[in-house]
Image (cartoon, rainbow, N blue to C red):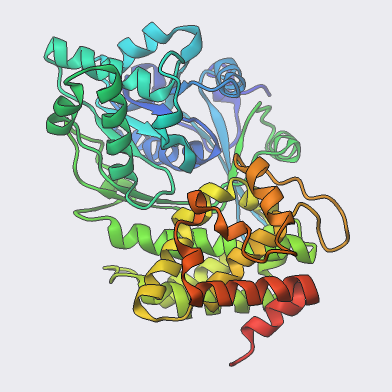
Length: 472
């Protein structure tokens, strides 16, 4: 049955019981991909089921060429989609999510999007624009882009005397609110003289920590939703059961009662985001390059390998955890144990390739802070340096069987030649200061990195891992 508002009464899985016609837009969200639909939109849907969010409906906004596909999919389904949860025991739970009540593809109507963003009823603008999406220095001011649309809306709000919205980044960046604030103020300074000062005085950018493993939707997922649940959904989203959202309670003009659906509202999200980025996200990096080189293509296969599980455990215990601040209310040993169980969930079928994507954005934000902190304190860096070496070996673009690796990275044209030169010059890859800063000047890091890289070339990934996890 084709999913739509008209067919919703006949859909036989869990679905909205609230009247979607009564929901008005209070949140505009840029970057409606799988993660947003499995996470923030799901939380808002939960609130709507409780009758607590009728003024907080979501309008998705797309700006990139690839976003047109999402516009078409959601448009054909009145904003509805299926969230499929893959449980570790092989069972599945499915629900139709109804919190996205509008979607705008900005290149088709940028003026309409700006007016939506500056409407007094739009009180939150949220973002999942990826870790690399905040580099405003490379944004063409004449293009339709998130910064241009939002700053124009803020300029009109200032002129019309309308309160500023809260801007909430939901991207995997340490201090994501601070990063978003700097990006929008920089762009505003370039395009609207005086606006940056108004933003600084009137707009809040709360930091947040978001957590739910959400692999790419495959044709198999679409077929499974149709065959198992009888729902013909153009773009369902699949996720693990676990979900977490820690959010600083700093909003300009009100917010939904997120705490009523499990969101943790705090004064300072820093300890939580460090925990997640340095354990889960950096843990994914510790897994993916070694995993790919060994021959794994699915995350759960690698995480279910005792050797990989032990490597992850040692990285988290000996190198990542010492860099963390106290995390109130979190049992860290349990969190780390649960992480490895989550990675090994066979139902999620997350791909190693997804974790390897965009490494030049991810490694500097998730793993290198661990390296730098431990260099400063004299703590171990052996495993972290080996993860960087595994990325460098992967970036050569050829696996251990001589098969090509499709290195998907915005800096691939620069990094792949550097990686291929490292058999003659072992530090060529980390000499790229745009990615690694001054790490090449730290002898302790270079020694550990080169030792791991040489082992990868000489012995292969599995033997290198076995040597790394042996007691020293």
